[in-house]
Length: 135
View 1 (cartoon, one colour):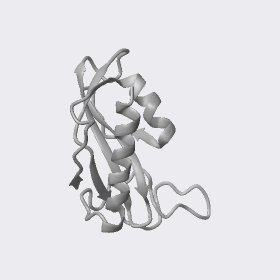
View 2 (view 1 turned 90 degrees about the horizontal axis):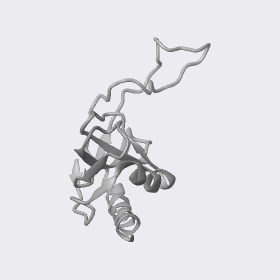
View 3 (view 1 turned 60 degrees about the vertical axis):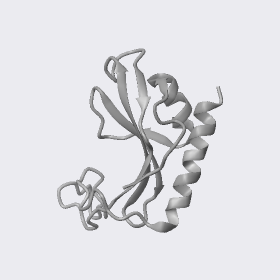
């Protein structure tokens, strides 16, 4: 994990409005959310596992699944997940099956982050600042 300082850290947003700004540019709410915290993920690459820019957030008034939830952004960071390649014996849908089970746990949840993607992550953080702080 590589933390990237950002001007968005500590800023507060309506979660719905934040989603409306981030989803069109490639962010999705990561699957590891709870009622009081979560993260937006931007997939940078998926050739050597998955490399993401993650933008964590915490609820400051209510639960994430409620209307009008305000969230506070945390410090963005880069992370890499490595998965074991192979056949998905449990979920075969015919003669051929995928080489990666999308529901499997990563073999390494905090794999080393390839240096060549760090500058991309920094550029993405600058884009976040422009989009979120321009209002």
